[in-house]
Image 1: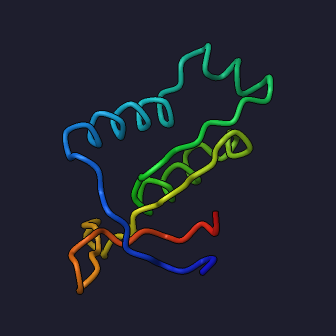
Image 2: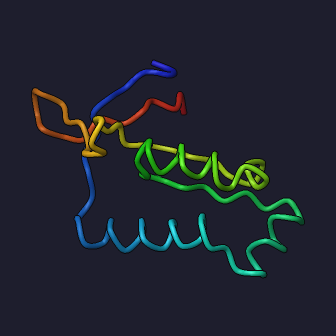
Length: 98
């Protein structure tokens, strides 16, 4: 269901945190080499970030938006905590239609 929300199983928490930290560094503090690659047309796929992180990126890094793709975005509540499926407790993720 494109544009909807669905529950999806998570990955091991420590590994997931490492990947998320790497992605956030790349997203908000890109190196000169990262920016050069983007200027040549490279697109970075950011996976499993929260909707709040994606919104922040779109505000703060708007000039780079053509080089970004976001998948499996985690839906959060007003406090930024991941919303979960009431049936199985898995995080809710935006359905990107892919």
